[in-house]
Structures are given as C-alpha cells and as structure tokens.
Amino acid sequence: MNVSVSVILPVYNRSAVLQNAMRSVLDQSYRDLELIVVDDASTEDLQPVVEGVGDPRVRYIRRTKNGGASAARNTGLAEAKGTYIAFQDSDDLWLPGKLQMQVDLLESLSPEVGAVVHSKVLYGSGPDGSYGVGLVSMRPPPHRIMKPGEDQVCKYLTENRISLQNALFRRDCYPERMWFDDLTRSNADWAFSSSLAQHTRIMEYPDPVVMAFSSPDSISKLKRAKAIGLIRIVKRNRAAYARYPQAYGMMMWRIGRILGRHGKRRLARRFYVEGLRHNPGFVWRAVAEKLRKYRVRRA
Image (cartoon, rainbow, N blue to C red):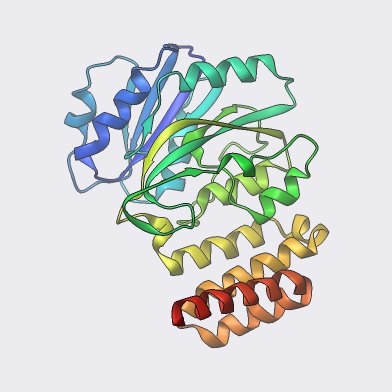
C-alpha cells in the first residue's frame, strides 16, 4: 500500500486514552495516511483497543521488549511507507485540519525544507513551566517562533523547539534510517531535532495543531533521565557544539542545575565550571534570576 503520510504512534499502556489519540489522526480531513501503532511491550493488552477502532489504515506492531519511545518510533519508521512522516503521542489529540495544512505547506515549499513545525495547546502547564489543574499555555508561544534568517543550528542546539506530534517531516529529511537515539529516554525529540537542524531547513509556524495534556507520568519530569538526555544531546553533536561554544556553555549549566537538584552536587560543580568557562554571561544571568526568585519567595 502506497500512502502519502505515515503516522507513527508509540504507546506503553494508556489503554483508556489511546483510541482518542488514534481517532484524532484517523478523522483528519486528509485521508491518505497509514497509522502505525507501536506497542512498546505494554503490560496491558492493547491489541483489542487498537483493532476496535475498525479502520483498515491502522497497523498494530507489538515489540517484545520495552525500549522506550525512541526505540518504538524507530520500529515504526522501519515499517513506514509514506512520503511524509508524522508522529502522534498516545495521550494527545491532533486538531482538525492539522495534517492537510502541513501537507499543503511542505508541497508548496522548496525541497530543502524538510520539516514544518507548529505549536500546541498544553493543558496542565503554565507559561512559566509550572504544573497544575487549570493551567494552559501555548508551546512554543507565538513570540518565540523562529524567524526567517535566524541561525537554526544555534537555536536547536540551545532550545528544545520541536514536539514531534506538532510536526510533519519529509521522509528523506534525515540521512540515517533510524532517526532516534534508543538510549535517550528523556528529551528524545530534542536529541533528534538538534541533529536534524544540521541536515535540512526547518520552518516554524505559530498556529496550534495539537492539544496536549501534562501527565503525572511524563518522562520530562524525571530529573535524572532529563540530565542523561541532555548529556546524550551534547555527545551526539560534539562537532556542532565546538562551533557554538556559548550554546555548549548553556547546556553545561543546565545539566549541572539538574544534577544539583537531584543531589549530585559534586558532579554538578564540574558542569557549572564548564558552563561558566564557555558562556559566563548566560551563567551570571541565570544566577541573578535565581536570586531574584528567591528574594520574591522570602518577601
């Protein structure tokens, strides 16, 4: 079966919300797609849930061993037949018209543009990164959308700018067959996009295309995994960070901050020193902001 778009949806358990995520893909006005649901060795029996949707465009693949979202996405990529690649998360909802808009954009743009990225509405998280019921934010906010002419390699080395479910990719936008680092359990989207930005042009748009929900079990909240993910990003892009020492300094500071909060103060100091050596301005601004917040809390 030849299709225009292969949509890859990795899932581990979450049987209660999986069909809603699938339906938001299958109910898109753009119909020429396949939905590859990759079950990452769930402890729940997800096959009846997937097959219960009753759509011939759905394919169910079960991994025999749990490997994390990156490994599951790579499994889906190996099976994908589409000209374009999209991703969905098991607890998010695509907004109507998402796929048609992004396919139209990629077809209208030069082949040197390998990906288009939009925003998402995130429920349960505020603009300042705080978590809680009733909080809503736009990620990224409109004023942070990358402008034409900006150095995208530098932007993507210093910021996690892509949520995979917000984007559409040309299949040939990345030189390697497997896009994701199986060892990266947190910030896997950043690990990929920081490398992708060095191979193809990425266009960002402010329109929201996804409704996302901040989950209690979100991998991004696991601090140790997050630190390991950032270290993997630096290792994956050594040559690029050598060209952007200030970006390297920012990453060293961030890793040190996470390790410090996790109780690894001696190890954290090594990263703080590297951050200060390569980007003293960023480090001092970060320290000043931390002191300001501390004084506000004490007031």
